[in-house]
Amino acid sequence: MDFFIRDTKSLIPVEVKASDNSTPSLNNLINNKAYEDIKYGIKLCNKNIGFNGKFYTFPYFLTFLLKRYLKEKNSNVDN
Image (cartoon, rainbow, N blue to C red; front, top):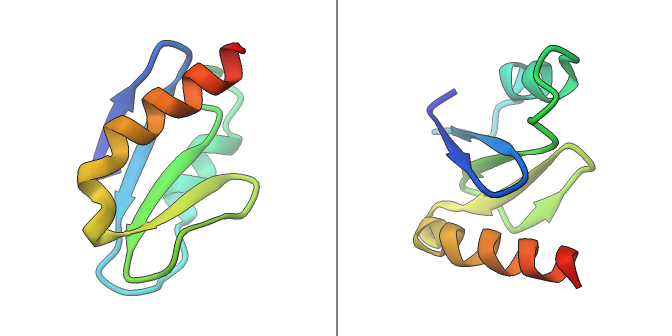
């Protein structure tokens, strides 16, 4: 992983990809039962915004909005 983000509910692995390659290390972390606080991940790459059930994909230029996104995502879950 390139780095991790911690929110109030989970640890979020973030992988930055130079190309549109697969992310086996990110998938392994999310699927590993030893890391119960990892529920999903984030992949930064040259693609559109998306979610495949395991991780969110964001284009590089939106990286500066990750903190705001996580804050709003957590506040919507609490309601």
